[in-house]
Image 1 (cartoon, one colour):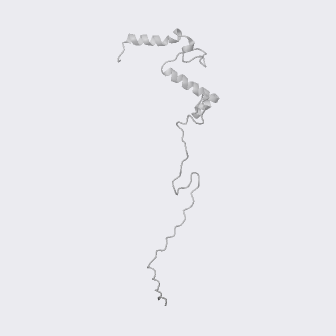
Image 2 (cartoon, one colour; image 1 turned 60 degrees about the vertical axis):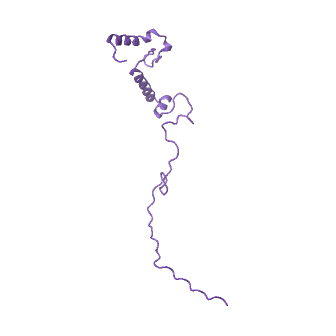
Image 3 (cartoon, one colour; image 1 turned 180 degrees about the vertical axis):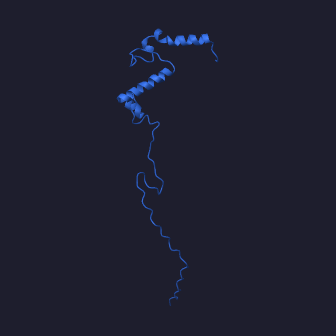
Length: 132
C-alpha cells in the first residue's frame, strides 16, 4: 500500500492494455461495439464514457430503451407495478385544515361580523307565589 515504482506502474498498464488480446471474447466487458463492431475490454473512465455515449445515442434516436433511460424507469423488462419506486413521490399530499385543496382557486375572504357581547346579566324571573 502506498507508492509504486515506475517499473511496476508500467508493467501493470501493459498487462491491462493487453488483456483483450489474451482473453476470449466472451470475457470482455464491451462485446460487439456499436461503432466499430470490435470486442473490447474497457478500463477506468472509458467504461463510464462509453456507457454515457450509448445512452445518449439511444435517447437521440428515440428507441424504447432510450425513452426508458430518459424517464428514469426500468429498461430491461422488469415489472414496475410494485417494485422500483425509489426516488419517486408516493402517496397523497394532504392539505392543512382550513386550507384550500390543491388546484382550487382561493375564494375571496368573507367578512366576519363580531358577535354581540351581552352588556348586562338578564333580569331574574319573578318568584311565583306558592299555590294554596
